[in-house]
Amino acid sequence: MQLRYNYRLYPDAAQREALAKAFGCARVVFNDGLRVRQEAHEAGLPYPTDAELSKRVTVAKLTPERAWLGEVSSVVLQQALADLNTAYRAFFASLSGMRKGRKVAAPRFRSRKDSRQAVRFTANARFKILDNGRLRLPKIGDLEVRWSRELPAAPTSVTVVRDAAGRHFASFVVQTADQPLPELDSEVGIDLGLTHFAVMSDGTKVSAPKFLRRAARKLRRLQQGLSRKQRGSNNRKKAVRKVARPHAKVADTRRDWQHKLSTQIIRDNQAVFVEDLCVAGLARTRLAKSVHDAGWSQFAAMLEYKAARRGRTFARVDRFFPSTRMCSDCGRINDKMALNVRTWGCPCGSLHDRDVNAAKNIRAAGRADLNDRGAQVRPAPVPAPRGEAVTRRELAPSGAQQTGISALQGREDVKRSPTTVDFYAGDRHLGSAPVHHGVARLKKTVSGELTAPVVARYRGDKLFNDSDSDPVDAR
Ligand SMILES: [Zn+2]
Image (tube, rainbow, N blue to C red; front, side):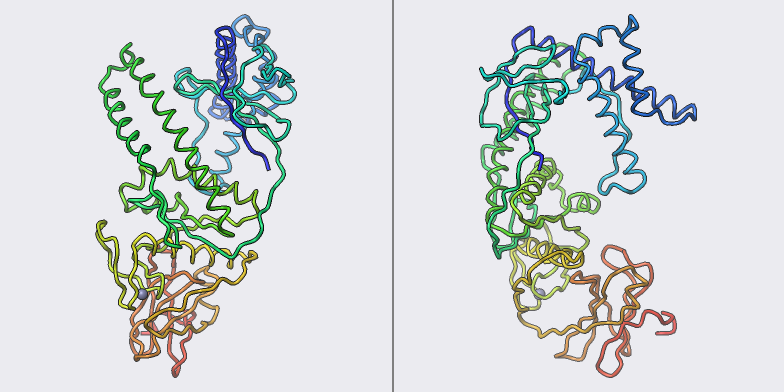
């Protein structure tokens, strides 16, 4: 697996200037390439290939307007074009639907004012870590590095980054071997909480540390001060720097803290399920969630690569069901509750902590997803439902074809004469429908994924999926 190792750099004045020049050149090459492609697109001409753009850079170096591109390593310029290609590939893949998740926008022009500036050196550039611990970069110099930890292997590339606070970092890409941990039985679902950073299905609640919350409050105040300054003014520039420093510090502290937490979760669990934030973003009802978003996707990414490296299972779960008000014991979907309701009771007799219940539902959905995909999951102990006695009966697969759902099942209450039928796709609760004269008809699911009604019908005391019949007939 490829991992990144980051170290702080301390360039001297001349090296800072040389780096600034490299950032500028990479930006110009990126923007020139983007312009060429945009103009070709507008003129209805074919998409200029990577090789064509590369040739243009070589030619541009010979012109007086772009001669200064020769002052930086040509690898830096080639890598700027590679970045442009990556951005275009992501955009095209997103357009065609090949790429999942949030829509990716077309590449945008880079600006001198972007808070993050970066250049990349590959092995071709012959960057070198010297015996005296300095990092030698072509046409930049030998930079001082703070080696906060050891590089596990020789890096294949290094990206030099300048952040908004004006600090420089070297980010090395290193190929590392996987280090699987001994297998465990525990599986965990994690809910992004309102009052907690993470709530786990085993009942563990993790709050963000106090110092992070305090720092966040202070940042908000600085940010407000910034927004009152006039655009382009010197006072604003000062305020920008003033905000960037503590921001960077908080981001560092939060990252360290998340590293510790994610390492611990991966160490203690064989499988980890979290909600898919992209899906959650579409149907977001909990306001304060957006506050956590940035931190959460970073955290989920940490869990993902650590799981891959340690031989664990990690999966994002689509939040198509109302995980907060669905009972994790009986599957019933209860009424909406106010945000201040922290515990609630289900008619089945279960008492739930709001967030722990949501985490349990995420774990169950994660398991079901894995089983659907045929992944290797050992059967996990499922807690027996309390209260009502519940049976499940398989329904004919005809409904599945109609709705694109792999397996539909009906669930009924066998104690009393059945009054409602719950519909499931796998373990996923799609909705309930009342029974009239032995027929239950589900017209809509919670997430609206049905294109046609699904009908369940009693024949004797057995429940059958009857979706092939004309729904109007069934009435
Ligand atoms: Zn219940």
